[in-house]
Length: 322
Image (cartoon, rainbow, N blue to C red; front, side, top):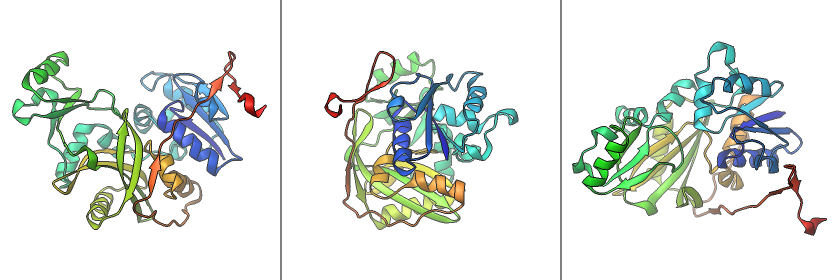
């Protein structure tokens, strides 16, 4: 097969590339990124520059670069949104490994996601546009209405700080003020995969470092299992979702659902929850391998890695291996 991964210089793109490299070692695995060829060239066979997803040339360029590809795997939310809402002349069809556009649009907008949680009776922190936030609701977590990761997120604990943020953001239509869930040691990242009516899920308690999951531990409880199955049953999808929640007085409270592969995809892959591979196999072969649920208490750590390039942009091998 021939794969093309977007956002290939980012943490999710790199993790996707490493999963593909491990599982499909003989296949062509290319990447594209608005930042250029590096550092993705340390993972992908070839790297191509591409305009930002907000550019009018993005979809045209992506279609040109994906000619002959079996699957295009977009990893950044702006690109997923652009592909999901593309005009007929710029559609990738079944070659794009993304969820239905209605799901993408609902959960990429954190305000519409909050409205979905409320309508579907899923426990979630109180959320409003920043401009509608009240000092009575402090402390609050301020976050961009759209976007992923920890960029732009901050905790507001007093009325003066809240007023400053509202003024700086001209009312705050692009930012949300969310009830701050204080139990940071009870934060979970969960993957849901569904195909042919079968739902698979895994919950991992995580520790964050610099906005990334540095360490995760597989957990299993009837409460959490029931909660994830309930969410999976109320979303009509085939593929992968990422659910993030914190415990509040012993109850799971969802603060985000990401309609895409998450950055912990390789962490899960390492312990047998191979949701990216299952999504690919379900799309390409209409079947998925069997799996055994990882044991509760299994721990996964994210370690750093280094890659070097010469002045021409070519990977440099360690002098120890020469």
